Length: 60
Image (cartoon, rainbow, N blue to C red; front, side):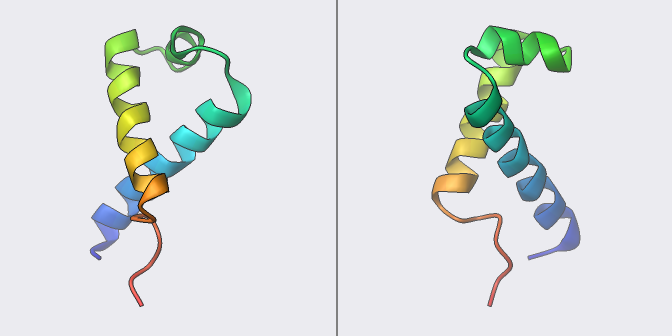
């Protein structure tokens, strides 16, 4: 995996974990990061996909 793709997938995974562990709503998470609810929902969905499919881990 390229360094850029790895950095992006790592960040998406980190955002998803932060949302999952620390926030009760997408609205609060979006406000915390200064994004719209719609944009944050898209990032959470991407992060969930990365996390659940282990896409953020280094290729072996």
